[in-house]
Length: 158
Image (cartoon, rainbow, N blue to C red; front, top):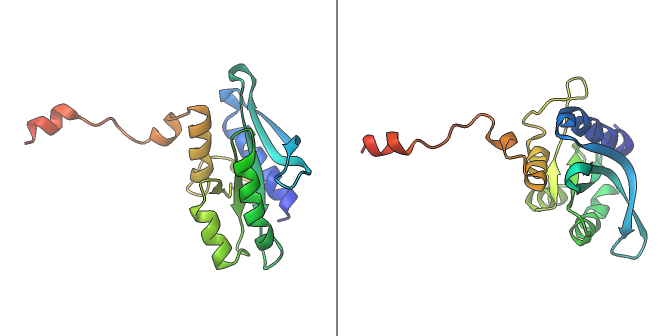
């Protein structure tokens, strides 16, 4: 899978999975200047016009060893400097151990690998789903299989 194909997969997942929530998904949106003064173009831009909220997503897919490792620290810094909520969606087996640790521990990165045949939430999309829930207030996504704490039961069992 190429980087472009990965960005389109992430865009397709969000557009399919969250269409009923009023999202409009765009590809390759110019969004201000990068941390080195270049025009920034984000891979995926998720907008909810009725709520005037948005989220910028940079997509990084690395299948084999390559130059993506060198770009990740810059991409994380750039995501943190945007004047809009932003993060990196990443997947692939080609990241070095150090860069993978950097991505896994960053508040500006989320592992995401949707199934292209079935664009539904899975364990491989939960990190992206959590960021969407946080930005747009969709807490039902993370609470879908949970029941509220039963204080009455807890008190009676003591």
